[in-house]
Structures are given as C-alpha cells and as structure tokens.
Length: 293
Image (tube, rainbow, N blue to C red):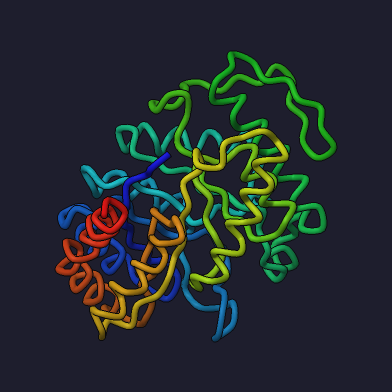
C-alpha cells in the first residue's frame, strides 16, 4: 500500500507565546501544509527545567480548530496517564467537531516522571497496560451506544459518549512508540505510527520491529502510515530536502518539522519552510520516477 508524502509543522506550546502559535497555525493553513501540531506536557521539558511557560495541549488544539480552515490538527502525542480515557475521548470529539473533521488523534503512554511526581498522576509504572486499555475504551466510546469495560486500570459501566466523531469510524489514531510493547499496540490499534527521534537509521530499525509485530497479530504492516518529527536549523535547504528524502526512502511518509527556538524564531522558520514546501513535495515525485525506471 502506497501512502502520499505529507508534511506538518509543530510548535510545542512550550517557551512560546500565543501570538507565535497563532502565526505558525496560519502559515501552515495558508501555505498548504497537511497538518499542524503541538505536544502534551503540563510542565516544561528538556534543558532549562520544568518551570518555564507552557500551554495545555488539548486547549490549544481547540484554538487551532477555530484559527484554521483546511489544515489537519493534532498533538504529538497526548500523554495517556494525564486524563481518564472518557474525558480524553470527549475532548477529541469536541475538537473533531470544532475543526469540521480535521483531527488527527495522537496518543502515547507518557514518560515524564517529574509531572507525575508534581501533580500526583498515577500509572507511570504501568503506562503501557493503561494505554492498551485506554485505546480499547476510546474506540468503543467513539463507535458504540454504550461502553462497558472492567479492566485492571479503568472501569466503564453503561458509559454514554455522544456525539460521535464527525470522522467515521473515528479520527486517525497516531501512536507514538519506540519500545517493543508499545510497538505491539501500534500493530493492533494505530492508523499512523510516530517513531521517536529523528534519525533515519534508527527509524529503519524500529520499522522492522513494527513489521514483525504486525505479522504476529496478522495485520498488513503497509496499512500503517509511518511518521517522524525532526528539527531543521533554518539554514541549509539542501540538507533539509536530503533528510526528508532519506526518511521517505525508509517509508516515512508523514514528516513533521519541529519548530524550536525563542520568541519569533519558530515563526520565521515556518515562513522559510512554507517557501520550501514545493521542493519538499518534489521528493516523492523524484522517488516515484526512480522506481519506474
């Protein structure tokens, strides 16, 4: 199964401003990017500690829905342990309706220990099992009249979830995974797999693990689109196009460029990327021509 090459922009919501976020969303929408993203943390991550400014990811997605007209929107990726699955399912449906059916539903097992410690979130020690149960519950809430579920971590009794998503049967599910147990969840539940990191060789190795996991559950691995997020310093267009091409050669057709930096630097980089988007899309045409020879 062949999937089209699609590009997205990501400004996380950390160390940024609302004006910068809105500017990036507008650029993504106007320039013809396929999707635009934030992330899901409640305390800042990375160098600089947890006390830097950061906005909540699902609230931002609702704002994205209202600020854009055509670009698809999502979160790479939602931390499952931060919310009850019924709440998360409801938030997702709300954003799907606000956007006119443009939601891409990104989810992962969560990992940030400091957030669980500070806020008293439970479940990091059983995060994969919780994610597995959440995926089953969320899909049921999106498609069934009533959901009953008696799991190890979550319990639903005649649970009602209306309205249903605009997208049928539900928004595309992106699962962020790099470990063997989470990759098995990708094989069972995902429409799109989001690989950790931005190294093409590492992505190739993880893809092979995904193919093995799909074979074990009897699923055609080609049904699952492959995605990755990677940085660009805003300097060499040639290096960017080459890196994108290297991912495409490994079957990575959903490519998200992560915008980092202070102030308006991500906006300036997004504007450069908008100008380069036709050249990036040319990679798929070039690869198709190579295969036809």
